[in-house]
Image (cartoon, rainbow, N blue to C red; front, side, top):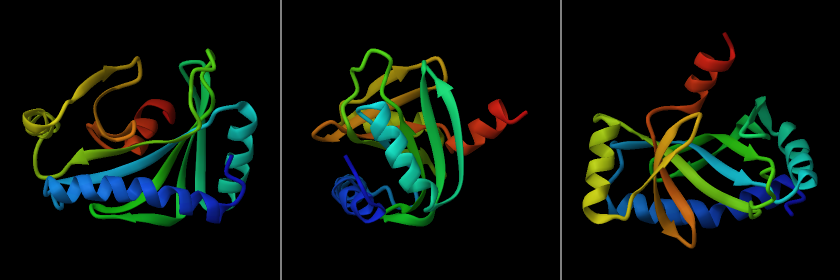
Length: 168
């Protein structure tokens, strides 16, 4: 379990490196933009501890319930630099009700720039194993880019979805 903000950023570097390698190999600069990085907690205690650490390092935090668990979405004071731009947001997921979730970084979600979502997905399908994941709150297309860490294709920034659907 992560105990400090320094440890959080240090652990994220490995996954950002995997994301950067994938992005550079596929020449995604200027064609995709990272939206957020996701960290999934293995327990309620881990979620509460990490959220407390991150609250002090965020400009704001929004929390909601999705699929029976808490999801916190925060904007970093200090973003995470990647090959496709700075990640300003974190999705922090509480343990699933069935306790099936493993602790750790899970994905970086990115959206298309200068082309449609469908065009981006179609391009990936030529060279990658792309898995369509349909959820009640949104559909994504996922690519395992190393040891279960995902490049998750999304239609746009999650903050826009939150503003449109939850803050009305």
